[in-house]
Amino acid sequence: MARTPLSIVLLVAALGLAAAEAAAFCTEPRLTVAEPQLGFASEPPVPDCLQGFGPRPPCESQELRAYRIAAERYLEQLERFARAARSYAYAAEAFAREAEAFYGCEAGALPLP
Image (tube, rainbow, N blue to C red; front, side):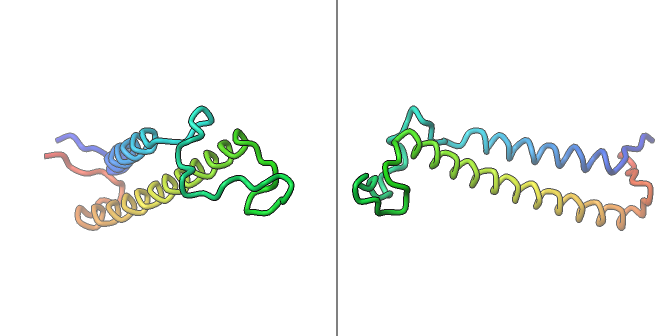
C-alpha cells in the first residue's frame, strides 16, 4: 500500500483553510479613497480649522481622512487574518499530535486505505 507522509496531509489541510480565509479576507468590502462616503455616518464631523478641537488633527483633508480610515480597517483585517492563521496552525499541530499518537507514526507517514 502507498503511504502519504502526515506532514503533506497536514500541509494540504492547512493550505486549504488558509486559502478559504484569504478568499473571505479578499472579498470583504473595504473603504477606498474614491468612496469617502462609506462608513462615515458614525464619526463626528471634521473639526473647524480655526478651533483645532476633536480627535483628529485640525484641517485634516477628506482624502487624508479616507486614507487613514482605510488603513485602520486594513490593519484590523490583517490582525483578524493573523489570528485565524495562528489558530489554524495550532489546530494542525494538535491534529498531527493526535494522528501520530493514534497511528504510532514517528516518521509522519500514514497508511492509505
